[in-house]
Length: 399
Image 1 (tube, helix red, strand yellow):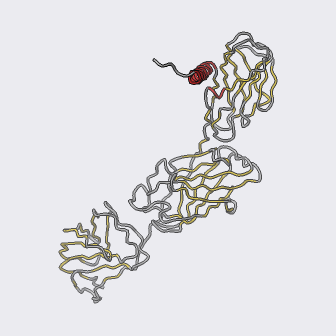
Image 2 (spheres, one colour; image 1 turned 135 degrees about the vertical axis):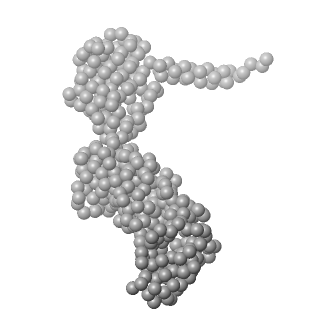
Image 3 (cartoon, one colour; image 1 turned 90 degrees about the vertical axis):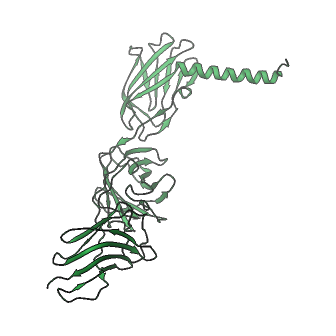
């Protein structure tokens, strides 16, 4: 059997050595944090196994973490002598043995939900060990109490304003920050429209504690992530408990008065790198006003009281009837309770360039007719909307 060249054997040996060192370090050093929520006052537990005894031990935290002046430290249950800076703790006693459990309490977590490996320790032998070989700490966002969505225009209308109201749980730092607004590509009860259907750009603004609205620095739609990113700048820290309203202008209102929410409808505050601070998913929708069309006309010209005529046709104007008709929608036509529909056999619905959709024996009541649409979604918003009743006659009111 032919042996491998020495250079290959050396590379293989080096690779094995690196893997062994990584595995050894992974088993002997770790950091855990409780709680993980941003800005919380937390306890950090360092589990360290030394290769040689040490007379001092300096723990270095990520720069976004603050070791508070009232912090406490224990080593294997004993209270040592120590000193601190904003993000370090140096221990100078109670370091006997190679296995150390160091607990540092009263440490403030970062102001945003970063993910970091930046923990390390330094021994008296000037040996620096990165805890990043072991585990990553992922901090968690704060939770908003509510985030209701409201729309300025009625169902399915374009160029609507979406307003999202909430109160911050955690402070935002001065400088650049983000509002991150999530949405579904289509409304949950619609097959062809969503919040930004046929929308190429929106504008964003925000109000602080009921003040007038201020424009954001930039507002973009990420159609891959289904998220609106609104960048804004603060000249000073914004305190926790601040009341905010974020307004996105130029969107499409929902198709119905009530909307079933889901986790895709959310809002977060975030830092300049879009690390989240506060947020809530499944934001609730306030009731949406209904788009009404009141200018429909009968094609028949009979207007004399108590006159009877057949096959009445009800036509809505070409615009602005924007409503989409889709499967399972119910169409109801109301008429005067003093009128009478005589022996209606068929109810027809169509828009220009569409074939008739007919239903036999429509359900009738004292003053309305109803049927359920079962065909594919009809979205021809610029075409006339026609309803035709095939009846023996339609009797006008007596006065």
